[in-house]
Length: 298
Image 1 (cartoon, one colour):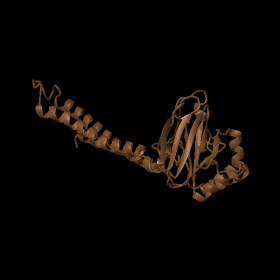
Image 2 (cartoon, rainbow, N blue to C red):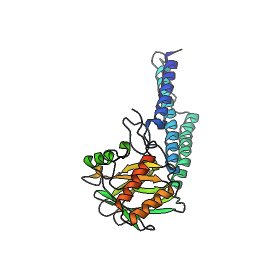
Image 3 (spheres, one colour):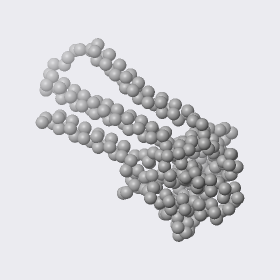
Image 4 (cartoon, rainbow, N blue to C red):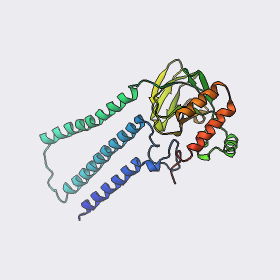
C-alpha cells in the first residue's frame, strides 16, 4: 500500500470514530450535563430527536467534504510537484470543473436546507396544547405560572447546605446537582403537549432545557413561545442561556416529568399551599425516577 493509501485509510478511520463519538448518546447524561461529556444530552422530545438527527447528518457531510478536500490537496501536491511535473501546464480554465465546483456546492446546500426547513417548521408548528405554562425570568430566578390551574411556582437555585439537607432527607443525590437544583421544581405530565410562553421582568434571559431541544429568549415587554412533548419521565435541568448579569450562571431550571396522577396531586397540593405534601409528592417522584436520570459514566 502506498503512503497516500495508508494516510487515506487513517483519515477515514479517524473521521468515522469522531462521528461515532459525537453521535453516541451513552457519552451524555440524561437530563443534565456529565463529566467529560461528548455529544448532546439524551433527547426526550420529538423536536430534540430531530435536532440530534440533523446534527449527525450535517456532521457526516462535513467529514466527507473535509476528507475529500484533504485528499485532493495531497494528490495535487504529489502529482504536480516539481519532480513529477517539471514543465507547468498553462491551462487556465476547464469547463467541466467550473460547472462541477459551482453545481456540487449548491446541491450540498440544498440537501442540508430541506431537513433544516422541516425542523424549523416543526419547532414553530404548535400542536394543540394539553397544558400551558407562562415563564417569567427575573434577575436571577424563574417564575412558572399555570394559568388554567391558577398556580404559580418561584424557583431559586439551592445553596450547598440546602442540597445537603435535601439529600439527607432522602432525595437521590443525582437529582439535586450542584448549581442546577432548585427549591421548587416545576412538574408537567408525561406525553402531553406543553406550550411555554416566555417573558422577562427586567433584562433578557433565555429559557433553555437541552433534553427538550427548547431554547427561547425571555424579552422584557414581549411574549415569546416554544413547545415540547416530553416522552420520558424524570427530571430535566436547564439554565439561563443569555448573559443576563451578575448571577447569570445561577438561575437554573428544574422540570420534572411525571404521570398524570402525580401531576394532578401536585397541582392540588400547590393550590392549597400544602408545602409538606408538595415536598412529599416530589420526593416520592424522585425515588421513582432514581434509575432514569443519571450522568454518563466517566
